[in-house]
Length: 223
Figure 1: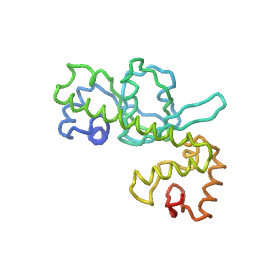
Figure 2: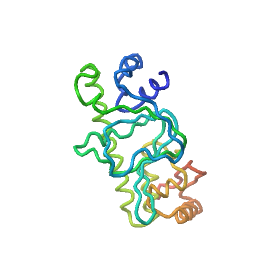
Figure 3: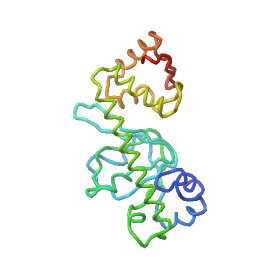
Figure 4: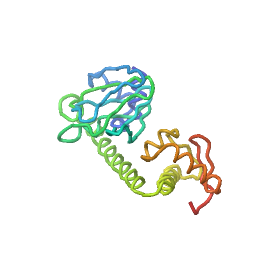
């Protein structure tokens, strides 16, 4: 129970509720904890989804796959992240992406009716949850807008610069750690990994940036 409470307290859509309140609500969610091995497919693109998952441990990838075998990484999810929430808010409830595990993972899963329909939990708590759902969806829309803006650049360097400047803005610092390794970043930017590594190396030689694995520092404002 403690593990579920702590994960939900940091997650959407339960961020507005105290741990004490969550202890009251969790039994009413009628959820279950499921374990998935690394590489397991949780949601397939085009699948009907009527449940919400909260990650208790492990890491998940949200991706689109193409007939060429290429993968476009939409997002990387870590403990306390929720998934399925934005899908269940649509009329069709059809997933536009796939979700799979990057590591062995534990997930708390419950049916979306519990928070979207009256009668399962008190209206006082349900209002706070739905308020958080609205903020979550707004944030997701902004995050996807930023990605579209980044990958819309024609040249590789422009994509890298747009991404790094966004991370700088998010962290309010020239030094920051990104959530992706090199392969994941290539999938996120929809570029070739070797080309990405080569361009980052060139940018470092030119004194524009410094980096070590997923730690970056912007050195020049002319980036």
